[in-house]
Length: 178
Image (cartoon, one colour):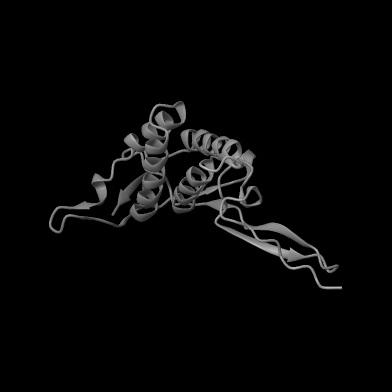
């Protein structure tokens, strides 16, 4: 009797999703001692980079007839969650890590705002908008993308975008610094 090998999971597998539909940034497999494997979330956070890559993967999967329905449902579920997540008010950008448990899905686990993470998410949203230009899904992705303002990260001396916004507590209201 051959021991069971771990299941192969592709990126975007439903077992890698939190309760709010967002892809988790780390998943592990555990063996039950009898040769069977179970998928368990190692961390329950979701970062904009993970979400952006997931959006692109779902667009690719939606092109396959056997995966189209589930991929489109997943895209719309992720967009719904993104529309509800708190974001940096001045820039419309997303925070570094969000909780993926449904009851706490608006909880921010890391309040930094990363230019690189948000650029990855912007690319994912752009991909969805381009793939579905005349649909509600495409419009929703485009609306989220249009809200994102990267000007706080732009360095006119070299023409590059980069850096993080980090909260600084001064008095009662957080201030942001690059």
